Amino acid sequence: MDVVSDAIASIRTGRPHAARTHRIAPWGLRFPAEPGTGFHVVLQGRCWLLAEGSDPVPLGAGDVVLTPHGHEIALADSPGSDLVDVAPEMDDSWVPRLEAAGEHTLLMCGSYQLDRAGAHPLLTELPPVVHLPRRLGGRAALNAVVELLGSELDEYRPGTDAAISALLDAMLLYVLRTWYQDHVPRGAGGWAAALDDPAVGPALGHMHAEPAAAWTVEKLARRAGRSRSAFSRRFTDLVGRPPMEYLMWWRMTTAGRILRGEPGVSLRAVAERVGYTSEFAFNRAFKREFGVSPGAFRRQGTELVAAR
Image (tube, rainbow, N blue to C red; front, side, top):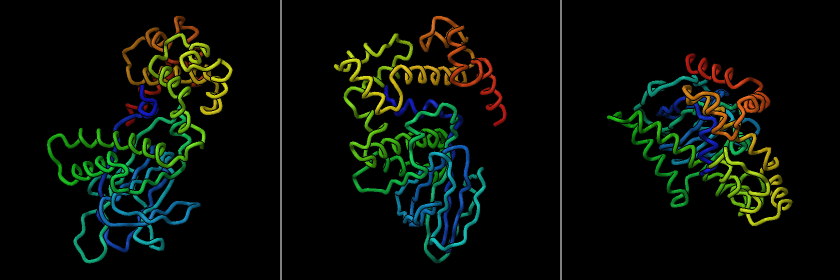
């Protein structure tokens, strides 16, 4: 089981959104803080990334910017340009294509709708702004997704809506993979090291693949070829919580995803799918994690969907 994919799936709600904008200098766009995760891709030209507390960063064609926690940022042709607020809900008509002299920049901007309740630490420990510069041959998969997205947004064709949604999901996965593989130094600890660790990485895979299994520290340590104490200490150091505590959290996170994504499944069936033979014990564990009963959690999810 791919822990990175699981981390994304655990908090994804709704469909991602993307729009293009064609700008001619001078220009400046401020993207206000939002509850989701924003992304920005320079398709053509260049611009500057402006974020509070950081020096301006030059961006070129193919560069990708992710704001995992929805922080406010701005993009502009120059750090000193005036900024105009961008409405949270936008489509391809939000800024018209312009034909004029001057330096042109073509951007793709949008957001992912995410439920941050119980968000996986793979996402929560990301910095406020993730910048991935384009590197020729260095991140071929991400470059390919960006080019395909640009092509789909350039001309509406049969299947474009489905293609854009799938490509945006793929882009988020490749952004995370690229960040953890190429931008987190080896030996830095945390989730980059946990996924790469020969004992902890497979243990996480086992928990994610079979959350209902009767895992114990001893079983996981045996599969990892480590002593119980050595495995538990290593897991806790890298993941930030002991193995059984993480397993409990992941079971409840999985249960929450089932409750909101599969409304027809009974509470007993949900309990069994995450390792509980007693519905009462499952209800108690779930309420301890989320602060509400499984039934109330499901109703809240239904109300959120209806409100969108």
